[in-house]
Each structure stands twice: as structure tokens, then as C-alpha cells.
Image 1 (tube, rainbow, N blue to C red):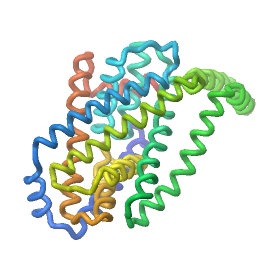
Image 2 (image 1 turned 180 degrees about the vertical axis):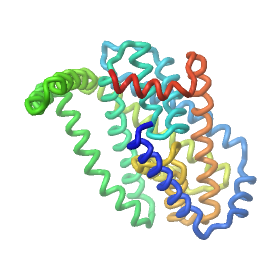
Image 3 (image 1 turned 45 degrees about the vertical axis):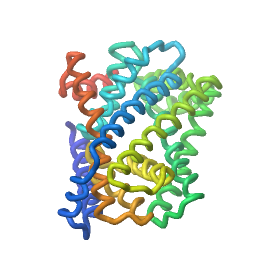
Length: 333
């Protein structure tokens, strides 16, 4: 691991530690543990099952973002998502995304830049769905949290600009080609050649946004995926007898995933718990209960894809060292 990567990992660990301190500050660990012991296992198992459904839906959404020429089975994409989640949950620097790009290149010869482009577009769609999960419910429920409002304001403009740029490049690929040629004029020959090649790969990766059917499928898939994800939060809430309504759980889901842009340790440890607690306490849930719920819902979302992803990785003849190989392969591609 390079020095820069080590520094980023250290920063992520420090940020996670800071958010854990914020989440635990003034709470009573014994009371939190008592709430966890009272959680109803049946609802937790149902929540874990629903999370697997959300993984299938997000894989289905990805088919609409891939180039139409990429005929890849839904079963493969679903398994790849499980491996991706496992990598992101266990390794720093979102290593699961790197492995996803590597396996798509190895198994279906999809260029690195094409897969990387669709991964980035996914994040943009996800960001807008998360914002909708927050802004729409806030019209019907009263949540007093100035911190959340600051985050919403800062991220809305960012996602809007990014989505507009990618839609422009998808509909008008010559604009991206012209931009790449302009940049290439100021680069050494080898870098200029690479820039032009990468721009063509990105254009191919954006093909999914040129079709109304593909774009509509991506939007519907995004909303369906995250509705099922929010359903997991609601079901785990029932296990704790937290009856705040599904709209509040939409806000919880949105806040957690928007907070994912904050660099932290693998699995968003600390950031996840602090985000969940911030929303639930803002609607009147007791601090200790909110933190107990946050820990358990994090396990329900973290454990199933991590176990499944590791099993699928081993079945492909790969081990945890595959992440280092994948990073090196994608850099050199």
C-alpha cells in the first residue's frame, strides 16, 4: 500500500473514531446492551432477507447502465454486487468497487473505464434518490436537525452538477471528445493518447443514458432498490418496538447513505451509527435506544452481503489477496 493510501486509511480510522465518540458521548453502554438483548430476532431475520432482495434489484438496475452490447446475466451481476459489498465492508478505500471493475474485465472483457463510469453514474443516481428520501418526507414530518440540513444543502448542488454533466456527455458525446482533445493538447504524447482512449471508453460507458428505456429503467431500479433498503431499517425498527413510521426510516436511510461520502473506516463504522442516532433522536427516540438500534441495523446490513460475498469470492478461486491484485490490474489497464 502506497504512503498516500496509508494516509487515507489513517484519516478514515480517525474520522470513524470521532463519530463513534459523538455517538457514544453521554450514553450508558449497559443500557444500550440491554436494548440490544431485547431485540426480536424474527424481525431481524426478515430484514436480512429483504436486504438480499435489494441486492438483486440494484444488480438489475446496473444492467440498464451498462452498454447495450454487454449481455451479462443478472445472476452474475447480483453475485458481483455481494462481492463488492464485502470488499467495501472489510477493506479500506472502497476496495470492493475496484474488484468489481477487475472481475468485469476478467470475466466479460468490459474495459476498466466503462465499468468505472457506470459505477460513478450509480453513485449519482443513488445520491439523488437519497436526497429525495430526505427532502420529500421532511414535507410531512418534523425533524429538527440543523446538521442534516447543512449536509443536504451542500450535496444537492454537487449531485445536480455531476448528473447534468454526465447526461450532457451521454447525449452529446462530441462535447466530451472535444474536451478530451483540448486537454490532450497540453499533455505529453503518452498521456494524450491515454486521455483520448479513456474518453472513448467513458463515452461507451455512458451509452445506457442515451436510451429513454435504459434511463427510465435506471431511475425505477434506483428507487426500487433503496425503497427495499429503507424497508430493512423499518423492519429492524419493529424488532426494537420503534414505531416512528416509514417516512422517518426513509430519512434514516437517506442520511446514512449520503454520509457515505465521508471518508471513514470500512463499513462506515462510527459514521453510520452517528447518522442513525442523529435522525432518530431528532424525532424523539431515546439516545440509548437509538444507538442500540443503530448498531443492530448496521449488523443486519453489513453481515449478510459480507458472508455471501466472501463465499462467492472463494468459489471463484480467489481469496482476500484478490483485492491487491485487482487494484494493480485496474491501475495498469
